[in-house]
Length: 158
Image 1 (spheres, one colour):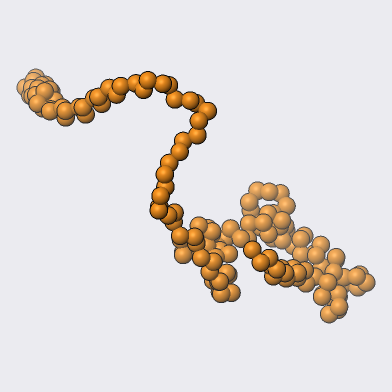
Image 2 (tube, one colour; image 1 turned 90 degrees about the vertical axis):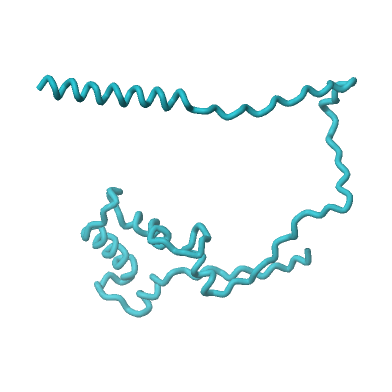
């Protein structure tokens, strides 16, 4: 048993010596040269003065072009939130979060059948104008989603 302990101690001692030897041989990279001191200007600069530059014939970047998207591209970009031309599962589900939160009455992020049923029954009773437990086509039409008015085309001649 003593021989094993002495052997383990010797191995650790050799490893420690090797680490210290390795660290001692490390070469430090030379430091960057210090900047030369520049002579201070005779007059201190006016802190209120605006900088001036002669741009000459320099030009900035070209202005972006407006691109007309097809209906399918618009529909795609409605889901592609980060515009990487790929729709992830989270991006696809993110459009349904508001509707889910309306159905989740107790706010525990679990939609039970009872929560769904209560919302559905409430909606049915709201549509059933004569309270006869049956919906006519006219009553059912009251549940149609409201159409958004079309955006008027810009008349600006800018």
